[in-house]
Length: 138
Image (cartoon, rainbow, N blue to C red; front, side, top):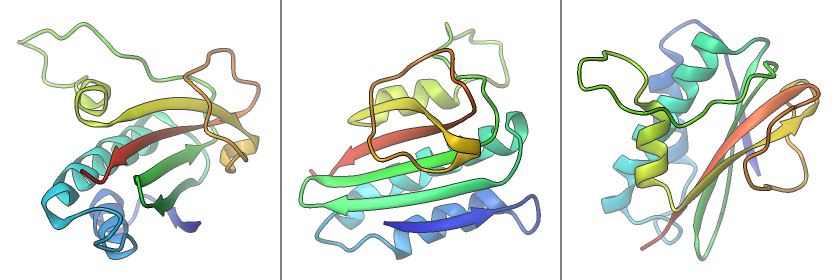
């Protein structure tokens, strides 16, 4: 598992997008699908920096089926899929993740640290959280 800790300096969303692409071999995610990984990573990192607390940690694992990206922070609030309002200028990040990822969810994490598994979305987190998405290779 690869990890990167982000802060509010030097465009962290852009840094996260590039990092995911650099650390994901072509055999696990073809170049044609990397833009999706970049977009979803950028959205979730931006959400964590805007609404989260503590350090934001980006993690990436990959296998023959695709990639699994996690964005951890110290905030307990769980992001949710909202009803989309065409006039709204924000609030589309989780809708993009829901539409483009193979799967996504949230799991509780100790002050934003990674847990050993990637369960389905949950509520009532005791500490921080990790929002994750899986993107299939094809």
